[in-house]
Length: 60
Image (cartoon, rainbow, N blue to C red):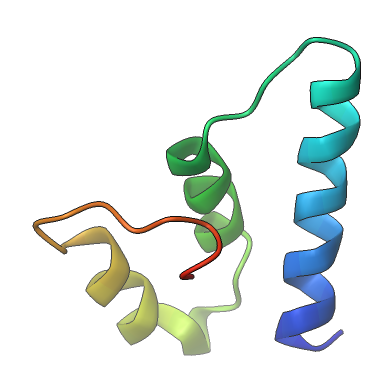
């Protein structure tokens, strides 16, 4: 699965949860996405999680 397919799938899950009043915050969605990445994405995960300002899911 490509990264864009993976992100779309995770966004779809979050949207489905929101439809039943179980809102997933951007920060939580980002953490779920990052935790599901393969180890080869480790440096990227480190960069995103150690940023001083928060990143939005759209910016991810």
